[in-house]
Amino acid sequence: MNESTCAHVNGKRVALPARPNVTLVGWLRDELQLTGTHRACDTAQCGACTVLVEGAAVKSCNVLACQVSGANIRTVEGLAAEGGPLHPLQRAFGEHHALQCGYCTSGMLMRAAAMVEEGVPAEPEAVAHALGGNICRCTGYEGIVKAICQGLREIRAGKLA
Amino acid sequence: MNAFEYRRATTVGHVVAWLRDEPDAKLLAGGQTLLASMQLGMAAPPVLIDLQSLPELQDIRLEQDHLWVGAMCTHARIARLQLVRDALPGIAKLAGGIADQQVRNRGTIGGSVANADPAACWPAGLLASGATLVTDRREISADDFFQGLFTTALAPDEVLVGVKFPRAGALHYVKFEQAASRFALVGAAVWRGPSGVRVALTGLGHGITRWPEAEAALSRRFAPLELHGTDFPADLCTGDLHASAKYRAHLAAVLTARAVALHQEHA
Image 1 (tube, rainbow over the protein chains, first blue to last red):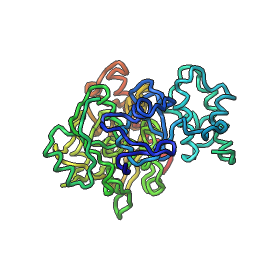
Image 2 (cartoon, each protein chain N blue to C red; image 1 turned 120 degrees about the vertical axis):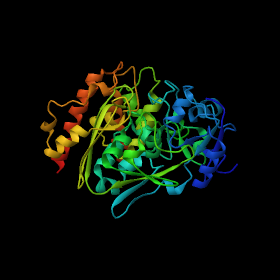
Image 3 (cartoon, chains in turn brown, yellow; image 1 turned 30 degrees about the vertical axis):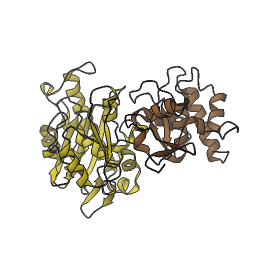
Image 4 (spheres, chains in turn orange, green; image 1 turned 90 degrees about the vertical axis):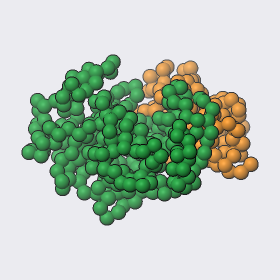
């Protein structure tokens, strides 16, 4: 395996698929069995498939796996340390009733995780604006925005990213 | 998604040669339009040529009279780079308003411009700014480059390498988003500089266009009220389920006036 035929998923080096016509979400879910990332609209609108590539939020249904060879990819499975406590964002989502059906949730969490580095202020208007690429049909967004504001504050205060 | 051959180019020469050998090949920039099209079955290229490993297409730098932006620069990078925000804040703001952060992290200025979607933001910004498009073999003015719906002056084997934005002058771009797609229902870019005023509109339906009547009016007096009572010609606009032609024509005037007001605010 060399850098052009593998990628790093949640810290683990994994071989990329042999055929190029595989999207990142297809590879993660169908070949790596990392089904935390969800396929909803499959047309790059809803953001449920959001993962991090080199720390940047991307819609994994609109990226080919072979485009991200050699890259560090983080999915929702990689948010909390293996066997460890919930990530501050995950805990905040629970506390603020930020999910109902859960379909958009992993995409929301990964989008929020990227907001730390982006410098999005932990304020409702800024967070809501930053969520422009993520749709939720259940919650009406209020709990999601509150949870992300809390999560961003805690992470920036040093409470375990 | 159709089966295809995937190639990663390491020189622009490769890309040109491959395009000549494989006339049905498509260039893969950020993939935010192309991959979605392929998944919907609207495109099925047998060969994809990935441009991400061409370092010369990633450069952003200030030259004496222009800002150089490489074709493979993402909207996100253009929006956040301090040197762009300082030199041409209107360009940074246009970039930061495209779609959403996830799309901006992958989508590129070159991909947007070469595709020339009639509702895209970058073509309007380039046309208003009087930008120059640089390919592997020549330079093309924005006025000559954009030729209608999804149509540019690029030859089938020609590769866009970057864009030169004049440093003189200022740009303000205002768009009214179609709520679901986030594309511009109509977008108005107004540039004011040493050579006068340029107005470019996107979203009207027949490809991006300048608006000579507005430019003349604003050259007489640069104020939003100069456009009061002047709509873009409705017969040059499209009517569809999102908006009537008349609505688009009126919106064009409203947004152009707002862009002028932004110029006055920031003067």
